[in-house]
Structure formats: structure tokens, C-alpha cells
Image (cartoon, rainbow, N blue to C red; front, side):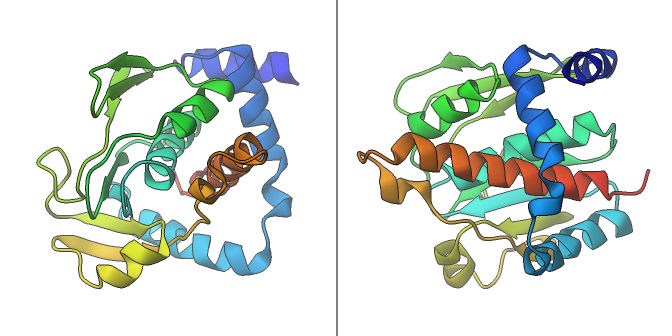
Length: 213
């Protein structure tokens, strides 16, 4: 199964390694474990994408350091995996900090390969299907993000409550995730970051699997 998945991904032009193949295989195998109440929320995003395939997705949380970054990346990988054209993924926060190194490390353990540049707010470059995507912390209205015709996807409660209106958004979905930051410096840190990344990946792969081609 893993060998066939690797061949498929290579044919799709997605740069792969064994860890990423294993992660995607586990993610796809976990669709049935998504609770029904959670699928109702995911269906809102599926409906948005099926109404407008050329929609930009902007994932928003407070610091643009963990959940929104993971969501932006996994949505990109999932869209490429299912060969869905016209979808671009972005992220931002209500303030800019830095892409948290714990989140970066978790993604790397799952097979994501980054090139890093800079120090205070590093830029992490990820390549998929011959395209290079840059991940760094920024505000949701940063010049690198779309100004209109996008779906604002709120990945944390604070951002969702503090930003009742996102200028330029043509749709909005509240797809909130628990913050793994709560476990920083504890024995559960690595486990909880991996748990959150797997949840985000599973849900966004599920969403992309339901988008009409």
C-alpha cells in the first residue's frame, strides 16, 4: 500500500519521502474517525470550495505561529494530492510573531521538508508540484495575502471572537483547534503537537477529498 502511494505521489509531482508517505497513508485511513459533529463544520468548507473552486483560503489564528501555519501547509499538500487546481492557501494572525519551531519540528517529523532563511521571523520554504511556498508569521492583512475573494477560516477561538469581520472575505468558516501551546515545556509537548498536526491534516485531506473536480 505504501509503495503504491509513493508511486502515485511521485506521478503527481509531489516531492515525497517515506515519512510523508506514511503520514498521508495514516491520515487517509483516519477519515472514519472524524466525529459527525466535526464533519458538519468541515462540510461548510466543502460547500464553499464546491461553489467556487478558484477560492483562496486564508487560515487565521492569533499569532500565526502554530495552528494556522499547519492548516495552510496541510491544505496545500491535500489540494496537490487530490490534484485540485485553483486553490491557493494562505495564513495570518491578529498579530505577527514567528512560525513556532515546535510546530515546524512536528511537520518535519511527519515528512515535510523545509528550507529555512532568516532568524527573528524565519521564512520556511516548502516545495510541492514544482512550486515553492513560503511560510512565515504575518498578520492576516499582510501584503502577501489576498485582499478579496477569499474564505477566512478561523482556527482559534480568540481570533474568531476578536475579529467578527474580516475585510475582503467572501465567506467565513470557524474551524477551531485546541492550541498545542498549552503543553509547551511539558512531558506531553511532542505528543500534543503531533496530535494536533494529525487532526488538522486528516480534516483538511477529508475536505479536499470531497471537492468536486
